Length: 164
Image (spheres, rainbow, N blue to C red):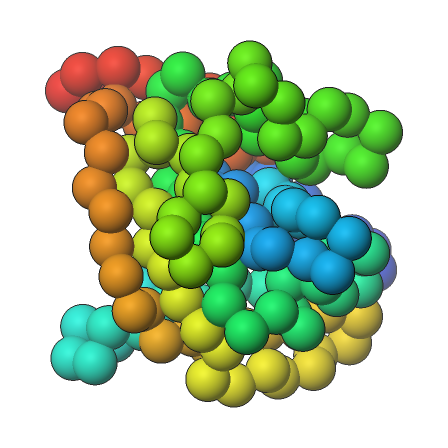
């Protein structure tokens, strides 16, 4: 049954809370050090040439990522729920030794334990409301050794190792 008596914005948010998505931490070398944020909006756009997209809001980290010449999209696995929480909130620790970060030769922070890290550069920045959709060329892919899933669903990070 479709509701028409409630604000579309609230229904839109409720609809996407019901839709599980993968989780990534997008990182870049910012002017004042590394920056990063948790994103559940990463999508494959094209295989040839390799391209992906994600959206960000106007936070300090998001602005630094959008302004960077390149960034890394770290696709998280089941052991990264705490890390996803840390990068989802401004007041949480980021880029600590315990989180296991490394740096690509090109300067972007990369998580060696991620399922994969994709280094990209922006092709298109599309402002939409208070967000920016980033379409990026993928320049390099580093596959991790992990498996399993970390999904964002109904405001929670849910981990699953192995086949369903």
